[in-house]
Length: 303
Image (cartoon, rainbow, N blue to C red; front, side):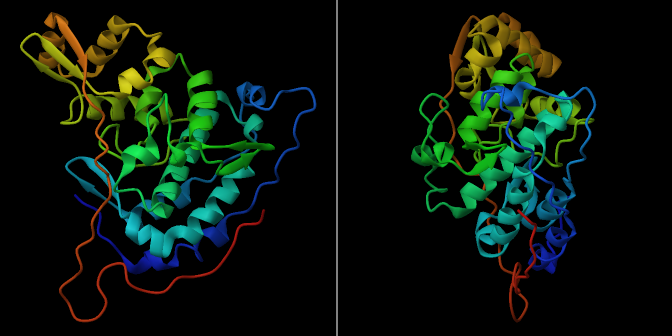
């Protein structure tokens, strides 16, 4: 059932942003190199990261179409930017090294994906994503601009993706489904924020949804057509091994598709789809303001 939009979205900046207590940023380690510090994790988390604002954000600005979460970037641009600024300010001060390995994975995926949403909403190029996003090997400005400073390190979406997530979770191929691309070329935006307890199950479910979707694996006769993301991230997650990709896809595909995949003799990469996941809001036919009308609010999260 698609979500019903509500005017509560106008209160995003004032309601749950005010409810957040800003964590105190931890000091840089004198003995740990900037990026190496993000490979350090606690056995048990000593800090509880707040992700409930993401659920409120999604309830206000997203809907599900054909099994994919889509985001109204136009509405976010008009009414959600203040919240995104405040919430990313909160995320940047989370003491990451005090989190367990699973909690860190959830944190980095959520942080990265909210930065993608923020960058998409601010960009004039979201309908022309090919240049702005680029590829994994040649990322565009949207992916390479420094957007957040965490534990003293300036990071871009590409930094978080390549130098943290892929570097530290290369043994977890399903992370590929948590790397939201803003387009149909990758898995859709997650329906719920990741947590340490749910992240692996959620990624596996997203993987199955993507592999078996129209945007996913296609096998016709003896030819397997594979989405470009497996080429983009194949070196990091599958050691560049085509058979490892095949085995991974087979583990998530429907049985009938997996059988065809096993018999496929041709394995080719399909061109990446830059078709935006943007949700287009149709105005209500009633008198007065349409959907997503109303005023904004104030409130802040401390630095």
